[in-house]
Length: 121
Image 1 (tube, rainbow, N blue to C red):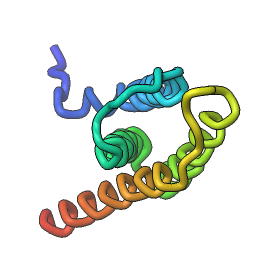
Image 2: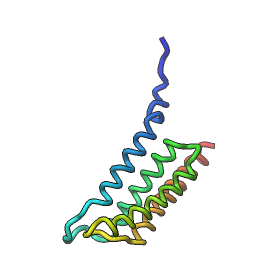
Image 3: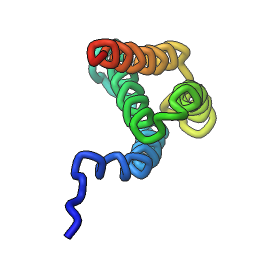
Image 4: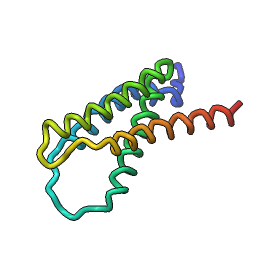
């Protein structure tokens, strides 16, 4: 009986996880939110950065040979979600600073992956 290589199994499912996270992120970024006193504004930017760091890492793992395309597509996706918030919602609006936070998350992922690869070699 052939023994399965367990370490490569999650990679097989990463494209599905990537697209599921894109759908979930789209829903979360486009739902109406009531006006209220919420967390400080900078926490929203941290959340954007963490979301896009996660999307970048999962995208890199899902499509390692197309990572540059994944990063560029995520940057465009960030712009698109901001524009859609402005057009499709009444309680949200486009923010260039949210997009900057998205880009920061993508760059943090690129830096972390580069440092990890450098450390391995």
